[in-house]
Image (cartoon, rainbow, N blue to C red; front, side, top):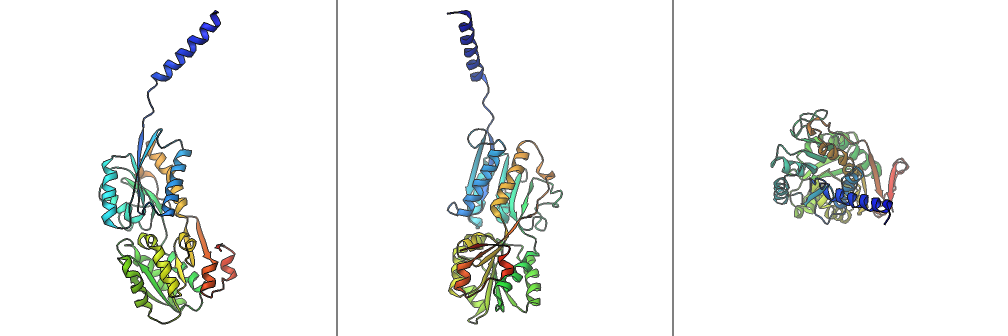
Length: 328
């Protein structure tokens, strides 16, 4: 064996030895609390883009990161134990889904950093000190400004001009901010000569009875489902009630018309989870969540289900078609 070959073999052995001697990369831990069941396709899509966002920033689940996630529902009986389990695992940061998920986690910890997604009123609920300087251990991404309520009413009246009475459906437990939406909705309704009826529901079994009791058997009724985890989880039932009673209905999220509802105008929820990944990355790299400003949405989408409009005998105005995604 010549000297050159001996040298190559020796260097190779040295490289292998050094590689074996290198300490394993420290596994960081992130918790994720979803306020939807694992069967919810929108929730799965949201979780997937969050993971993809972290991967693009160098965090791979199973390599240098462990993601512990819990699926729940908009029900304190499932959210609180799930939040307690996650906090007990002592992750370095937790991603919280919506107002109810954040509230459950806040009951369990005031020290572990939390990044929230799709919370409507973090300042009004006392969750952060301000949007610019949240302070404490919480920051994240809001869902809507309450003025959106007026926009929902205007769009509903535009696509269904004959609507004269509108039931506004929400769960006061999972949407404690409901009154802040009702004000703009009622103000817009007065200008449009529409009567509004607040319809609080706390159990899915109440949905149909509460809506029919509010609107009676008169025609020209309509429906607005507030931005609410309860109505989102039970959306199939809400959509079915609207179809049975031939109610033009306005929703806050795209998955409603995608699953048979008439129309939605609101944020791209999945995109918010993509935006949350860089905040989690920054916290893992040492930044204080209290110094990261709460971000408000800038991207909104109008989505119309053309088949549902046809079934209701509605002609979609050109003014809406120009800017809408139309589902056939």
